[in-house]
Image 1 (cartoon, rainbow, N blue to C red):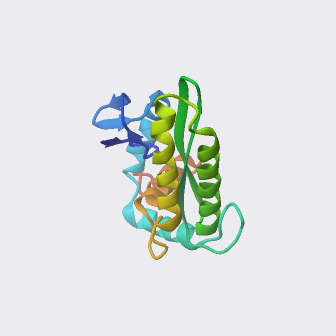
Image 2 (tube, rainbow, N blue to C red; image 1 turned 90 degrees about the horizontal axis):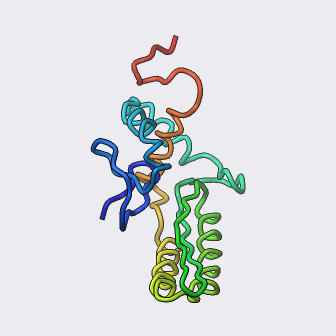
Length: 169
């Protein structure tokens, strides 16, 4: 299965392709320039920033790190309509588990009510949340998802981009 070059979502059907990059939708494809620019950031700058974020305080609860990307998965259904998705959050393990537990409970209550996808996707999304709660990113080292988010943030913020061919005088 393919993975979106911008948000990291698994692409089951469709998507958009820009050059050699594959995206889950047109919104992410529109951000393709940021993905390309992010690949040009100097590796030592990215590593320094990733370590600072990973060892910093949680942006949600302000508690101590490690901070990483924790993904919560939801599904809800109504008769013939089912909607599911995943939402990555930059936070500590405790905040990540709270979001995953909430999403699992939401899905258990509201996910089953659509045919056929509600019956199929509810166990999938609940299992993905439980897997994230009891597994999740290794707290000892930053995940590739954290590196991707930090890279994209580095090219999106204003000011000179060290490592992108510009001088930082």
